[in-house]
Image (cartoon, rainbow, N blue to C red; front, side, top):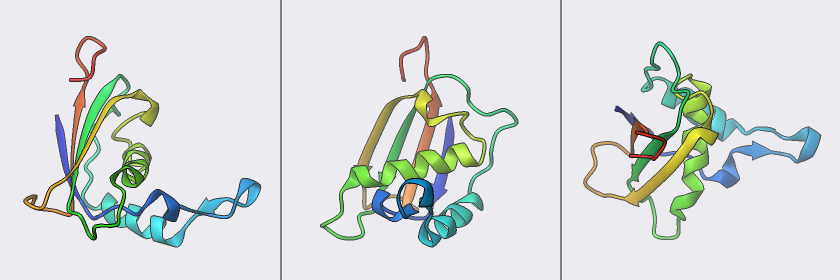
Length: 117
C-alpha cells in the first residue's frame, strides 16, 4: 500500500489547452503536477498490474464535481512512475472529507487475485 498527501488537483476541464493536434498541457496542470511531484516518492519499479485507488478530497466549494479530479491524479501518478498505466486501475473510490490532513489524500493498493482490494 502507498499513501500520498497531495495538493488539491485541478478539474479535468483545466488540464489541457486547445483541441486535436494543438492540444497541450495547461499551465495550471503543469504547475500542479510539478507541485504534486514534491510529495510523490515513486517505487523502484512502477506498479504494472491491477490496482485500486482511494482518493479523499477537501471540498473547496459546493459546486465542484468530485469525478472531475481523478484524471489529474491518475495521470500524475503515471507521469512520476508510481503506476505503469492508469488503465490498470480496477477500482476507484473518491469522497469528500473535511477531516483529512491534506487537500488530497491518495491510497494506492495492488489488487489481489485480479480483483481490486
